[in-house]
Length: 262
Image (tube, rainbow, N blue to C red):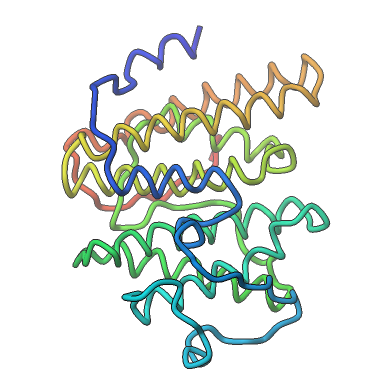
C-alpha cells in the first residue's frame, strides 16, 4: 500500500537523454564512464599501492587526445578504486568504493561540461576522502550516514526512505553497488533539478528507483518474512520523517539526515 501511495509522486514526464544521463547509466557496470572511452589498456593497481594520482600526473598517459589533466587524475582514482570493488572485499569496502566511483563519474561529467557549479568539487572531495580511507585501512571509520551537501537537496523522500531503511537493515550486505549508486544519484538528481529544472533530473530519479528496487529484491530474497515486514515498517517511518523536508521550492541548501526515531 505504501509503495502504491508514494508512486503517485514519481516524475513521469518524458525527457530527452542527456550527456549526464549517459554518464549515470554507465554506473550500472563496474567500468566507469571514463573507462568506456579509453583507448589504452591499464592494469588494475595493487591494493597496497600508495601512488598518488595528483603528484604522479606526469606518468599518466591520456586516454584520448584532448583529455585534461584533471580528467586524467580522476581516471587514475577510478582505477585505484577497482580492487576494492571485488568480491574478496567486505560489503562495506565494496559499497564505499562504488560510492567513490559514482562521485568521480559526477565530477568527470561536471568537468566535461566546464561547469562552474561547486558540485563537481564537492564530488571530488567526497571521492578522495573515501579512497584515502580505503588505502589506509580506515574505511570502518567512515559513517554510512550520508548527509546531503549544500549543493543538493532532499527530493523524492520516498526514495530516500527506502535507501535509509535498507541501510538500517544491513541492506549494503546484499547489494553494495546498487546502494552506492542510488545514493549518489539521488544527490546528483536534486542538484540538476535545482540548477536546470526537472527535465534534467527525471531520468536520474528513475535510475535510482530501479537500483533501489534491485537492492530491495536482493534483501528480500535472503531474509524471512518477519524481517521483510520490519523493513517495510522502517521505510514508512523514514518517509514520514523525510516528507516534510522535501525541497518543493527546488532550492538546494543541503540537509542533515537524522536516523529514524531520533
